[in-house]
Length: 362
Image (cartoon, rainbow, N blue to C red; front, side, top):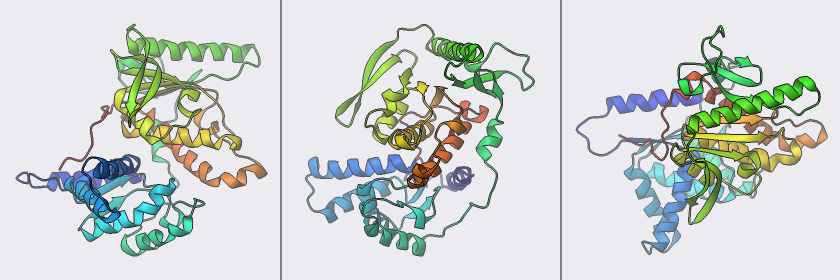
């Protein structure tokens, strides 16, 4: 996949960097987080440092970025916000003019970025600049989804499982031919008959049991997280164990963005989400927020435990005439489904939660 290839490149720079150098040479960051920091630095430049004028503010931001490293590795480069779209050309040309090297992964070719976005005609010159300045390497011909290979696609009744040795996620059934089973995705289908009623209850019981196990019978209470001078409500949390639980509509039913979800990922190492529905093209705002949420959890290496109405591949379906306007959402959600598959793999579950740690060491 794209991200592992970029990680190999980044790690090779780390191993070849001179140990005598005190300044970092490279930084690696999810593009969502990078743009949030850019807007934060622009705000600080004006309100704290008293800098006036767009050129002076941009100079301050560019200096801040390059102090962390001149080789910038961006994961999941995408453009969904009109403010970002209008800023990117000045930002990136400024970086490159100052000697920065940009490496990025994306699920879109440059020409497909921000497709259908507001005022896209103002964004097109940046697309032209990307194609002229950067070397675009396409990986679209590969038919292998490496996240699926890693997770193995194994399943058990009522939940989706992976193999591994982390006892916190073990099922009681050690007779499974694949070894010990870890369940992080539970399918709680609607009750239509006696069999589904049984599966409905079993999935929910196992989901709740895992929450109790990971919170170790510690007090569960509501709390708030400070996010950019406002408060984000967390309905169920073990502050002792750093585990939280939300309903789908807690997370996606109201206007939330990357900053909110990253704040959750930086505060809790494990996040449970219940009542995840099957979505249609009438609910694209919910789908977009779920995509952003999963990206943020992945960036922070959060362990995500889900209780849903359907399997990941059935979670967002767009059919018939009404779906033609939502090809971008379908494309993006397919990437999210693939990412959700990886997040229940043994390899992912073994990763250390990074929380607020930024991977920008030299």
